[in-house]
Image (tube, rainbow, N blue to C red; front, side, top):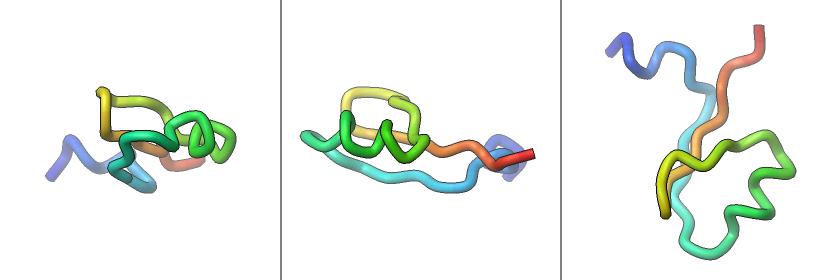
Length: 39
C-alpha cells in the first residue's frame, strides 16, 4: 500500500489529540492521527 509508505504510526483518539501532538503525531481528521517516518 503505497499511500502508507511514509507513515510510522496511526492512532485513533477522541480526546487526547493535544497530548499526542507533543509526541509528533499530526491530526488527520477529528479522530485519526498519524506520525510520519523520520528521514
